[in-house]
Image (tube, rainbow, N blue to C red; front, side, top):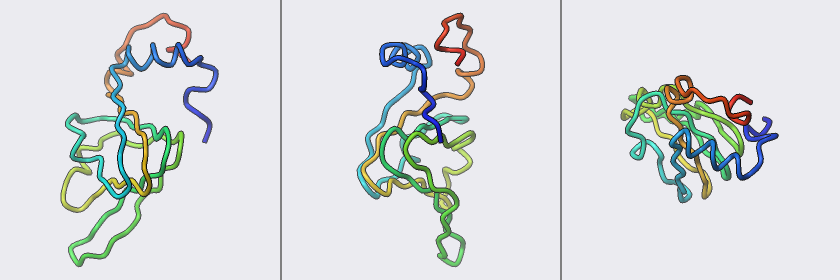
Amino acid sequence: MPNPFDNISVKNQERLLKLLEAHTYFLKKNSSILPIITEKNMLGIVISGYIEIIRTDHNGVKTIMEEISEMEIFGSNLSSLNNLEYEVIAKEDSEIIMLDYERILTQESSLEYYNQ
């Protein structure tokens, strides 16, 4: 998947993430991101590392629902995953940026790098 920050300089990337009130999390291998997420409609970008969304059914059978690698985007309504059936687990040490989806949609900006 292409880097979501292609064609945006590091300086403008920092400005964009500040404008969107992004939060960066560093997860150790086998830790979960769900306890960190408190807002609905969040998007995550895996900057480095690798995560999996895993569903455990009522019989204890685990199914990998999605595998997310570096520079891939995940989410939409993560709060629906925040229950006993689902886990979002870092399969290796990972850096993840979390963004509020509503803020992305409602942010008015004429900045060139915002609209890429």
